[in-house]
Amino acid sequence: MTTTETPLQILGYVRVSTDKQDIGPEVQIDELRAEAKRMGYELHIVREDAASAATVAKRPLMVQALADMKAGKYHGLMVSKLDRLSRNMEDGTRLLADSQRQGWRIICLDLGVDTASIMGAGMYNMALNFAEIERKFIGKRTKDAMAKLGETKHMGRKRQLPAETVERIKAARASGASMAKIAAALNEDDVPTSQGGAKWYASSVKAVLDSTARESLQGFTA
Image (cartoon, rainbow, N blue to C red):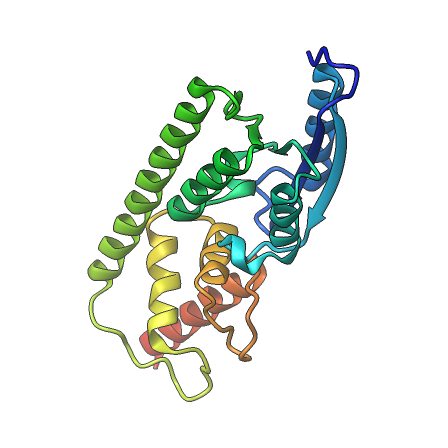
């Protein structure tokens, strides 16, 4: 627990996700508050609705938070899970380097680490490496599933999605990914929806899969 008379000023960063399997914002806030109370931190919460923003540069509130860190307004940045901070190896490594150079800490509750210590910084880097490996394995499984689907079939005149997007969705589903995970991945890669929008949901992924299933059935009964 902090023993100084003036408590550490800690910014708790909460990132909202469309993936229902991920930890919700209320749970994140409760965990941050519990840890701040346990450690005697003075906590300041910032909540960002940036589910599809995989990189730090695409999150305005995170950009501002990092500017505040650099200016010395806070002593550290705390998140409930590492993926709320970054899902990108390059971003995560740069954040650690900036924090060490500028004199603030990163606290990840799911890892139980505080980068103010040498061991904490090492654990943080190790977790980033494992997260990157996991992402690559998921990408490989999806690519293999796409290869098994063979050449793209004609999707009909009514379909507005590019054939490669449809095949990507089918392949990801075939590899075992949930519809929410597929939507999150499409959002991270800025893949447009059938209407030209930039945000996917589990329901829109389901609609694509249902449409392709109906077309396949029509082909068999024609």
